[in-house]
Image 1 (tube, rainbow, N blue to C red):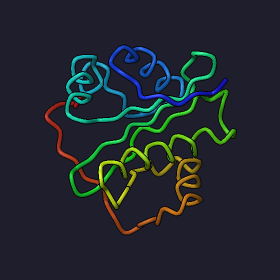
Image 2: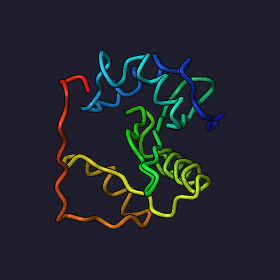
Image 3: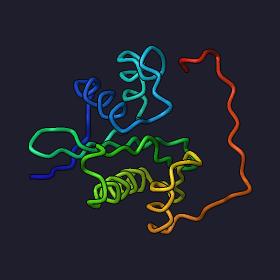
Image 4: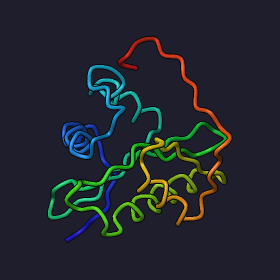
Length: 143
């Protein structure tokens, strides 16, 4: 049976394991993705939604809010479970959570080599802005 649920700090290890299996490039287990940082992020309103099959985490998405816009981050599906519509379910769940916060604009950043995610978001009505650049300034390689 497939079930969606909000994840908690108790799911931290399973989330990191799934992200690693899904080959997410931006995992920082000693920094922003450490258990203590995760706990702070959850306390500040970050929402993590998981998709489980018989109690096993097969998908995850992070929804954040910058007060003007909602962000869908770190959408990941277990490689063995892809192409079953699970990514779409998680996007819809993240959108609903962000809309419940009163947000009317929802965005996502997608790495340029992740054609599957780009196709999913385009299919769901997201506009692709090819004229934007993502820039960041980091205190360390773990942030």
